[in-house]
Image 1: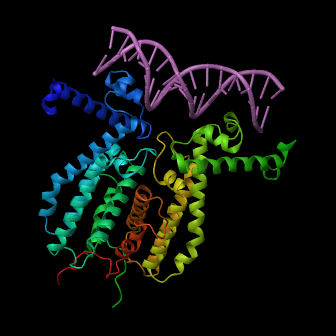
Image 2: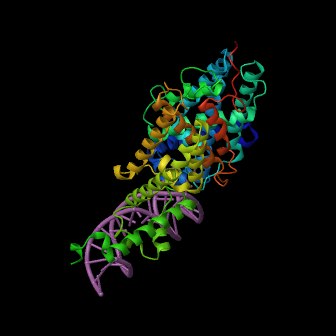
Image 3: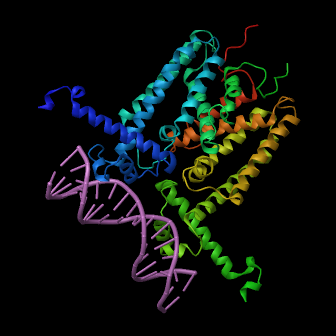
Length: 221
Length: 221
DNA sequence: GTCTATATGACGATAGAC
DNA sequence: GTCTATCGTCATATAGAC
């Protein structure tokens, strides 16, 4: 009986996983044109080459499919940041580190707009990600907090900096850049995007390196 | 013939305007629970107390209704900022002025979440606001630019500040605060919101007043 | 595991009577 | 100006044959 074999080595299980992956990929591709909330299972089935009811052999509901897409997106961004982590921590200033981190985030969001919308907005009113789907996103925040702690320990941030507040402010800044870019000029890429272009000066004010890009008058002295 | 009378004094015209307003109000109320993209004309008609086809006597399509809602939202936020303009320009520092402006924006967005989503995100894939609907939003940006110019002229911003870049960065910051608050904790109000709470420190870094809330290590000297 | 067939109901929009 | 009736299309989801 196949049930006695480890799941990963079962040929049928492997084939099933491939089908699941294909369904998710097709769903993401369709959401890019129809909008995240406008996904139609009929369209998904047509693109996959099966009939609609067959999808229910893989996902018990439409929201379960959303949850799988959410999970995939969260894992993808976590992997992307993870791959850049060494580079981010290698640079010698908080400005360079956070600008690089922000650019990695911005680039990922522009090349994965569907995932970004699903992860960072709430485009489907009756869908809430499951804890398992959410977990990589939590881990991403934890890793970012660790990045901030590392910068502080290396003397690149004020020793008395409130890490949670700093983390919050930085996330807000990056979220602002991404949301403006996606909402107003989604066709621009990460390099030419007019809102992504705000990252250097925002990061500069954040890391407090005075000079070009800072707007406030210097305090009278 | 009623057509020869000025439209504004025509009783029938007035009644018609009232019905249009009611339809818009109902639509906004329903979008608060069903999501902006999930609006159903059947629900609207039911709440208004008419049958669905009757709505087509007032709006030629569903997107035309969205456009009317968009217009109303844009006018509302423009009026809100306009009402606060005197207070904003009365204060004596860029920090106070921009924090107040940000708070007015944040409060409006939290109490008008449907409008905020429709104006600042793109929740309905096949809806694009008409130029008329968009015009108040353009005027809002122009007024904000004028606010920045005024701050610079009063010596509260660096005399060589790039106003367009400053405006962009500030809009990005406020958009970040609002989008994070709406997406992650829409039930919190403007006073207790954990992301709205980032406004002071963000504004402080923006206006470059050093001290509490700034994270970067001071440059070695 | 995939299919046909179907339940069940929504949707936006139109035609035409009154 | 509102209605009934309906068009045509779509949706998610289920039952049961093969």
